[in-house]
Image (cartoon, rainbow, N blue to C red; front, side):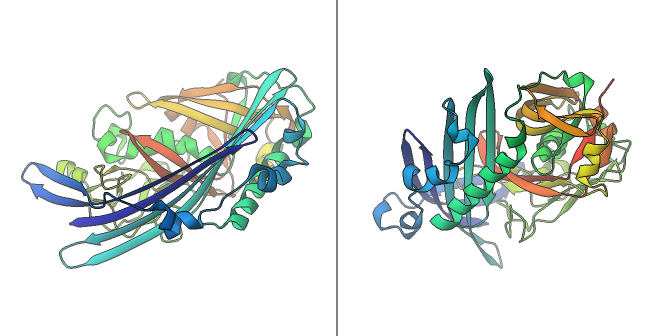
Length: 402
């Protein structure tokens, strides 16, 4: 198989103080071939010169100004009205053109994506209050559409926190409360704690704590987890980087571990079917087993009912990174802030806390699953390759361990 690839990347970072823009274009190809002991990849650059000023893609990227475009969005916001507050917006627009030439077939895959990050830091009653949001749309947005999307995200943040910002931040002991992982963003737990462990290169390392659970019950409840790649999903492509058409993978069914995500290398090494999860950042990087759109399936409970039936809990609205030890299944996630729930009502915003424990015990203590599944996009790093992934989850509650 041979892949021809062109990549365009436009990045802007804008704040009240400065604006920075970078533009990158790359073009090259990959040849893959098999030898007795493995699969080999050769990459080479095609174009060494490029005129950014004449390129239609870069000329169509929106030129956003703080005073004209961003300031009006936040002029009425309590964020902007606070003197000790900084807001930084990062914008990334990508275009990828790929042509896959197989023995009897040529497949064209051209796609765009527009993403932005909101980073807000305020001082509330002597404590830092930090919000970081990422939003990705799988198309090239014009200036008007992009500003409208930013406006919507700022409104969501306002709606989450506005009612509680006059109160002091609440210090919470995570061992004493239930953890409520909200729709969409809470899916990082499934992505990190389960998803990576079910990437075949990790799974068959035999140090993976899930390795001996194949075909056995993984959780005491009837959860379902899948990884999909359809044309309407956030992450979608017609063929993987190692030449396989992607298929949906049912990872966990009714609490039982059923399958893993794989690529051509793992097919050859471990004899597990290639599910089309071989992905790479570009033609210069070898494909690895990577997640696409990984999610926990819907339940039947209304999310408001989950809050109403919680006596003491935290809704983890701002999860900013985590770590999982795959050998034993222990994890820790940094919850920058959450909404504190007492006797079925939200009473304020939490100070930063750590959500830690055992993946196995946390899965077993999921006692309710909402019916509000949604997806978010994020960047995921594996072996130095930073790729966009999507994870989804309805609102769930993890009962406190005590």
